[in-house]
Image 1 (cartoon, rainbow, N blue to C red):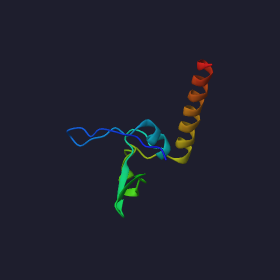
Image 2: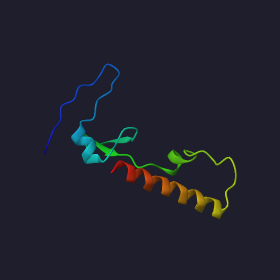
Image 3: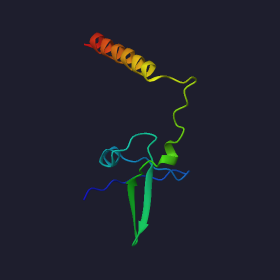
Length: 88
């Protein structure tokens, strides 16, 4: 078992050690769940609910046809491939 000692700030905050973040698979802005049971506290990566992500992406300003969407996807893919080529 590996332990990490952290200090609680005056605001009640702690920094989650890098090895714990890696183990949990969390990144900045992710959420954690604290579960208290049988005299212990367990920390888990929180799973996003549909309510958490609802309307997280703004609606399009205009309706797009399937053809419009495909054309945009092709253009964005071409730009991505071109950028990758420049970085090599």
